[in-house]
Structures are given as C-alpha cells and as structure tokens.
Image 1: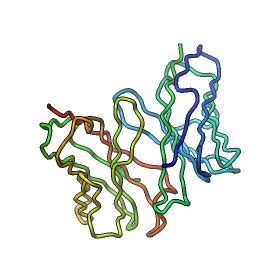
Image 2: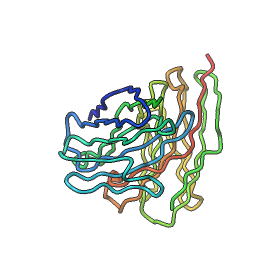
Image 3: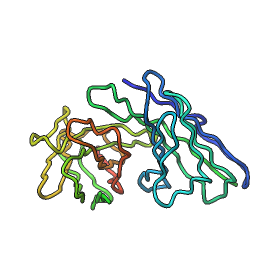
Image 4: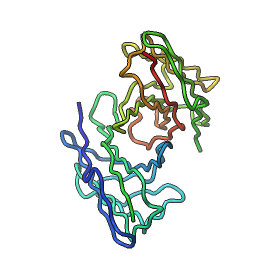
Length: 117
Length: 120
C-alpha cells in the first residue's frame, strides 16, 4: 500500500522559534496534500490543502502567515510553524492524495507531535 | 458547511461480539464520500471503510460493514466478531466530490470520534 512519512515525529522548541515539518509520499506522486491538526483527545481539523506548484488553500480561522505551507514537488509538502507559541503545541498530521489509485484515496502520515516551551 | 456528528464518545463490547458505531452528517451536496477511520494509540490514521454516496449498496470490508441511509444522513459502522486489535478511536469522516471522482480531492471533515473498548 501507499506510504506517507512525516519528519520529525516529535519536536520540542522554544517559544518564538520556527519549526518545519516534512510530509513525503514515498511510493506515489501526490498532486494534493492536506494538513490537519489534532489536539489531545480531540478530532482532526483540516488546516489547509496544498497543491503541487501552487499556493495552499487555508481553512477559515487558520493563520496563513503563521502556518506556512510549501508543496514544491509531487512527493514533498512542508509545514512551517513560524514564531511558535505554547498554544501551537499539538499533533500535526498530513495526508497525501493518490489520484492514480482505483479508489482515489488519501493516505495519512504518522503525525508529528509539536511541543512549544 | 458540512458537519459530522458522532454521539457516542465511548463504546464497550465483549470480544467476539458485534458493535455498532453511529454517525450522522449534514450536507447540501448530492455527491460525496463517507469514511470510517481507525486511530489506535500509535495515532496512525487507518482507513477502515469508504462509501460513495451514489452507491445504494452498503460497503463491506471483511468484519466491517456500514449501514448507509442517505435520506436520513446516517452512516453507522458495524464491527462483527470484535477483536482486541479493534480497540481504538474511530472517526467518521466526510468528503465532497463529484460522482465517480473518487473522493480524494477534498479535505476531510471528521466527527469527534468514538473510543471503542474491547473487553476480553
């Protein structure tokens, strides 16, 4: 099956610094990738949709200047949390769309736990 | 905007028994896709089953089946012969998309989840 990786799996940073999270589709090309955020014991909330080579589309209430998304290639999307603060601490999950699959499925990465001190 | 509601925060079932998880949704679209995802303690999201709204036949995947009631906007998941490995959070999710488009193009709207406990 299709595999999506995320790096790092866990990151701790100081308040005010920026953190970059990578999402890679390992064995398929993903024209579309999605970024979700999950607070403890809560559901996943869609943050943004990124299409290769174009600007990301952010959901209402998500600060585009704070959560920078770049989808530079068909296998890599990055999420940069700029000037991170403790309230940004969360679990960030990406998914990648395999449009070539018979069922056009989104595959999820294992997630990245961000802790801001 | 679409909404997905899971009214059961937690469910418990004896091993080998059958359990049904409920999900209702609200949408004004006629074409869409519905999913059940499993999230074990590792937090890796695993697709359990998907249903295309244009299909009347309920989807099945081995021990997992759904009861899709389009008019009632209901999409429940039945797990038969429950196993210890089924213990996890289960999320119902919605995706827009034209008929036959596949449903992978839009981001997912998730319900709040149901924590399934399997009693040995």
